[in-house]
Length: 304
Image 1 (cartoon, helix red, strand yellow):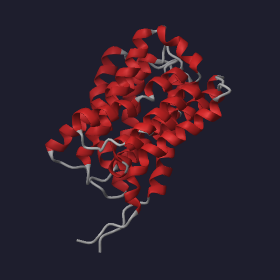
Image 2 (image 1 turned 180 degrees about the horizontal axis):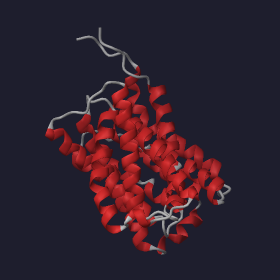
Image 3 (image 1 turned 90 degrees about the vertical axis):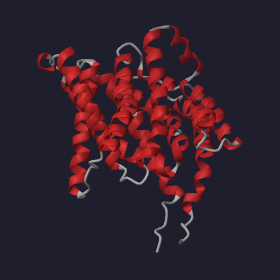
């Protein structure tokens, strides 16, 4: 008997969890880079998160693949989804506010949509998804506030770095399709361990981490960033790419905006604009519009 596929309601709930985990990561990064250099912060982040996932896999008696071809894919995924974007965002947040980083990085679904529509073409372009893109962007502008865009001329290189990280995330969402059939935690662990192997030597050479004296707040932020916003988030992410598709999964960036701003209110003293609630409604509508084509996952799979 063929097992049933997961329900759409469950996948959308996981999408919300993922958005919460990643939305809070901007505040964790902002606190972390106060006393920990970006490369070292991300090197330790990937190492801790990868180790946690390896422990989970061992507890579940799931083994990592030994095929060199799969590990080469893990390395590519690591570059697209952690090594490059994580480091760029951490470096940028030394001079860019967490709220601005959220709005710039929330363009991931736009780049994913464009890449899939123009180059890869493995996801159908529909009016519903186009509406989702427009509604999501409108909601982002309302939640953050149009006045927030006034800072776009400052720290230009840092902001361009966040845009480059956003494009990397879009490519990662598409490349994740190469891991279909694997346990979601396997590519998550494999890519994070690969990322740590790449970044740790760089950290040792550039930052000499043994000379650092990080604050307690930065250490706690790093631990939360590693365990929750990376290890747990990556496991959910790889599952959703297989069920909601790459565009549907990256649409969590729209939810990530109000969550990221709300986290900034608590920890960084930021304020929401008066139009935040209207923007939140637009954001939710955008997510629903972009993910609703996946409603077929709610129906049982037919037997062969």
